[in-house]
Length: 396
Image (cartoon, rainbow, N blue to C red):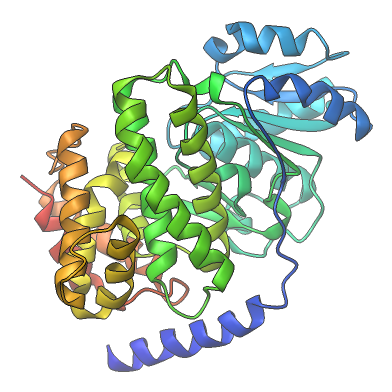
């Protein structure tokens, strides 16, 4: 295990240096009430005549959507994306895109529609490669079709990330990661989120919190910009998530959460996530646990498992929230973790997953370790037994 840890740290240090010369970019971000209505203009200016719109039927029936769609010369809709999108769904999008003669992609919804659409865009750019062959880092390396991401949840940050997360036929959840998958446009319209139920608002908001925290406490890849964005996101989520859950029509809270999710998304795109995500992906793949819920439950447990290695950065986040101002570094870190537990309880997040079967733990640990190592620059490198210990803490 010692040699494995050394290898991981050497890999991360080298990758961190190399990442500084990669062409990172942000999408063109359009924000504010009614900003969805600018989409036809953006597509037209880019020379796009027929977008494929990946969105649920409910989204396509919303008045905001119909008002926007009336301004499009033509479009094709795909409505078959489910939570934790499957490779089969990605292939269906690719086939429909080609059959309908589309020239651009629009994803409207939460992380699942955006992930499926981004994976389909990768396949269209690499027609001779399967999704599985594009798994991992920088395997696409081709320009994708013009892509607009319109989040209707404030959580995944997919509108600004390099990742498309999919699930294969063995229930293994993994990501295609490439700079070309960063959307050209991100439209943050708070009116699209007001109908989101309180439970989904909570889970997606805590997903964004996990992105911000894991990005902030990671090693090697961070920059001053990513740490600043992560701090801003953490502060906004603690301030506005309870408000949005209590009153979904509060447009100020909704806009602030969309912005926080966007900032956290960019932070983790550059600085990476960590072991929370590695284990959460196994829960989504094996049991279809919503990703935000998996992250929310695992986050404070994983932070405790890191122990002293994460104290410095967690104490800094406690300072952002004004927690335990006179405390020691360890006391501040404890206060931050406790604040997450309190918010989870206040928002109705469960503490355990009854779905986890003991016989699945070795497979979960193997998948989590393979995802995390050597890439994720976590405070503590985990082996399989470490992941199993954390998983046991969230079992009944």
